[in-house]
Image 1 (spheres, one colour):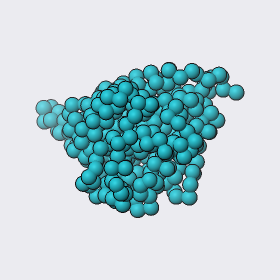
Image 2 (image 1 turned 180 degrees about the vertical axis):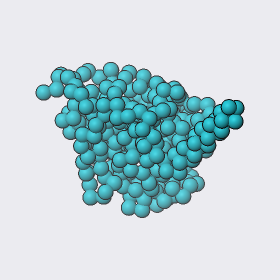
Image 3 (image 1 turned 90 degrees about the vertical axis):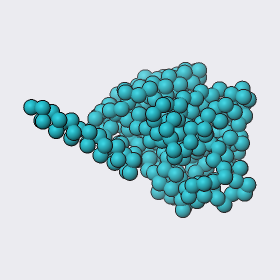
Image 4 (image 1 turned 60 degrees about the horizontal axis):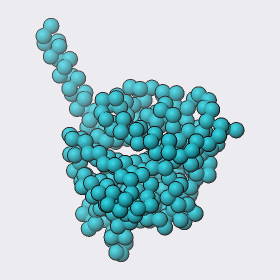
Length: 304
């Protein structure tokens, strides 16, 4: 009997390690599959996929509840990571399955990737997705006045830079009030000089390079921000979130910083998926922030 228990425990450990490696290598696609198996659909449905440009990456997926809702819901617009050279919004259904049951409409947005997309393509496409969401989300039960941006890694850069450097919102005739709040997961915000191939490929042509850095555009009239980072992140150092949060607070903007001990670059994203969703504080912190900032905006009338 003892050897059977030992064998089963050994197999469980091996499976856990194999899953961890698979998530590190194949990322969001594996995570999405695991979440779907472990947690189910959770009454979440893909409502529509919309192309926003000629590039196949310029797409948004809109998710909502299978059940009818009476009032417009707050919106989470999620932008994926991948070093500005990889990633597919289709692999992030687990984001929708995490937030739709909590009362949100979810939009996952793509953007042009290297080599077809280099700075400022990622910002143009991300802000284009914000503008599209503002103009269209009411058709899907979402409230255009309560849009919360969220991104992981490169996607966190996109959403933070897109709102801090006002020229990008202004190109879509939008201001900072178009966004109720911003959530950055393990994002790079102060990474010049460029030391990684992905950063050099995406930004190396820009002179001066400092013009690509969110930390250079901190200003008081910014949407509330929640910056999350794993303390063991070696891909994007936690200091990126730490210095941005401190700089925002210094000028009087609303910023909250959470650095999680023992978590790495991927862990902060994994924590949103099942079966890890209820085991780590990440989702709890995100939901609290998202509800707080969306509650501060008047709710629209019932859906017509």
